[in-house]
Image (tube, rainbow, N blue to C red; front, side, top):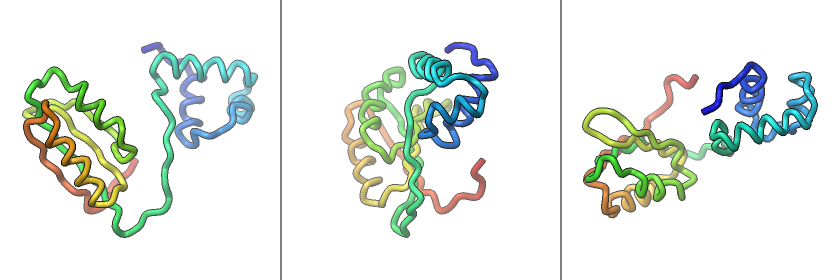
Length: 144
């Protein structure tokens, strides 16, 4: 991963606040040309610093909850096919490789209970998944 300078960090901070900020607006805010900002954003995307852009929904209905799923694999060093499966679900926010007995920790956010159950069912049926443990999020106490 490339070293980030102060301008890269400023661009990333602006995009983190709002990924749809126009390049011309970013350019004004960091006192650079639109072309220079576009080149930096492209470099950040190509190098893997920026992996994608996302949507944050403001409508939180009562039947929408989140869950954390701990996944235990048969082949611990080969999580790729499980990660590929999870990549197809918008509700899957993060998939972490973790230490300890478990292999992966999957964060499922803002999905109805039925959708979380569907994702867990597909995990259970996956040939490399040995076991899962699901914890439903009751509420957020700290969000930084």
